[in-house]
Image 1: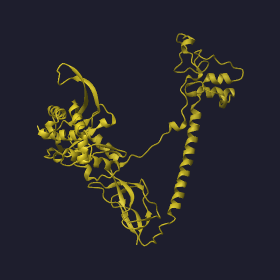
Image 2: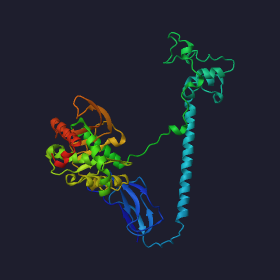
Image 3: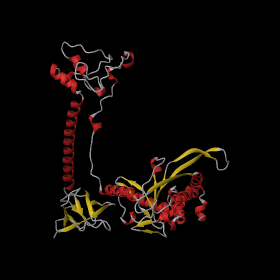
Image 4: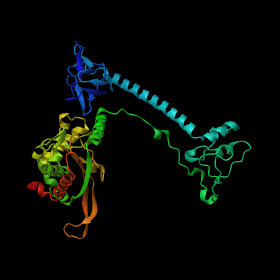
Length: 445
């Protein structure tokens, strides 16, 4: 009796999913617990494994909108198991060949349509009208207009018994015809030396392949992300305050201890662990930044669950460091490495991406010098890190003297309904002081 393949529940309050790419084809033999298909919810992509060994029959194709509990295929465990050297490989290769041939046909048809459109757009309407009146074949005319467009003067030059105006004469194309909006014939004459240009001075034609247009359906993850970001701007009284931190001490400590740290803990010492530690210290001093608004109440948290924004091919995800206040530098770096790696492969669970109380986003790894991060609802604060750049600032060791120091702009976006402006500024200053004097984090001052 066939065994049904049922969509599991991706998590609490999530019911709708999209069927992703099937890893097997109908008619193939699959082994129990072998990954069959990806399903995508608004928070994560999950794999569905085979409940039994047998022959697979797919009933829901890629892209189908389904609900948790729906049947997307069956497996026949009573089917005869094929020999190890079965004929699946040749059939799969043939299927791939057919798919490639179909893609080539579609691409050829698309290119032909684009060529027709490009041919129609390379002649100005006035030039086309005059060519029809004078019986001029446009195929043999080389356009001298922008991007090689054929203009009226090109057609007139090719028409029998017609003398075209000399290049650079400045005669407008609309002369002798309907006036154009850009007809400047009433303006003072400009010397030929000023306006003359060689025929090839226009913008070169771009290959059709460089002007392609395509559309892709938004994934549930990106749709959900868009909804949350828009909701954050619509419902929260969001403001951003900025400051900058001198990274000299953190860079010195990292350089001095990174080899020993890696040898002892098996993970590199990065900047993120310093900022997580600094955020934990600041959140203890200013608990409002670590709070939620729930209905008409403020929910405060005695723990610090720090969300770390991670960019992935599927979209932005924010895995959470649970109880970051209890973690060491090595523990933070190890956990971030693990979460970021699984985020790139879409292997994070729903639980690992929900429940954070504060978020840190590092746009500096992409080269961002300054940005305004958007709140991650229902959180009341998010810290934005940025690129480290050497800038001339007052030397802290020699007041009144300038020195080049490695500086990083910091941004704190906060919900003004929970956090007052004074608290937000002091919170960011606390982060700055912890980064510039890392011993404060060790002494918890």
